[in-house]
Amino acid sequence: PVYVLAKSGRQFLAEHFADDSFLVKPVDIKHPQHIVHHLRCAETHIALDRAIGRQENVTLEAWYNEFDVLNPYEPDKKKHVSLFTQLRSEPRKLFCAPDAAFMVGYKGHFGVFYVEQDRGHNRYDHKRVIARKSPGYNEFHRRQYHKQHFPATSLDTFIVLFITENVSRRDALRRACAKTDEPQLWRFVSRTDVTPDTFLHERILYRCDDDEPVELVKL
Image 1 (spheres, rainbow, N blue to C red):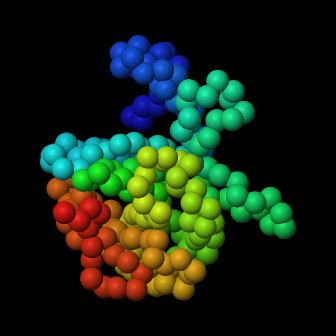
Image 2 (cartoon, helix red, strand yellow; image 1 turned 60 degrees about the vertical axis):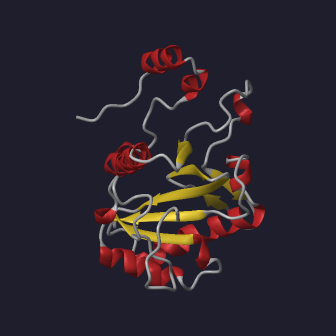
Image 3 (tube, one colour; image 1 turned 30 degrees about the horizontal axis):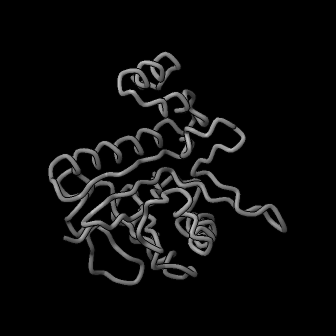
């Protein structure tokens, strides 16, 4: 079974945790046909939560899903902000739509990661996936949009954490990404390598132009 948040659940959480930000959490699945994709995102969040809980040096400051409200205490709903962002309307629309984003803290520094959860769907080959996603993140970087989403960040850049289904898909995406304008923004990892024990400090992430893996947070 798959469980989703209901309005009564939002109310309970807001009361239980004394946190009214729960009252604007989404209660519908905008794209029900992508339920497996949403579950993959949830698995990533759970793995990160457990990784954080197994150590004391790195903190998880925030996690947002694609349609979460990032400024929940803004009374005017028209001013609510989510990760899904239209960056340009003319001459051609440009969007950036991360599946999730989070910020971690370590020794007074706060780094932002945008999550792309790839299922390796046959509809999009690896070149087309990167061609669709990279322009939005390039513009995010140019405008420093991550500082609007996470004002507490101490860094002028961010990382796009691209999680895919297997090693061959990971490496195909890396090759495609190496030809983009901002390849340094990206890190790629196979979902099979992501566990609570490896997520933070094991070298399981790969850059576009280097076969030497790196860790999410370097101690």
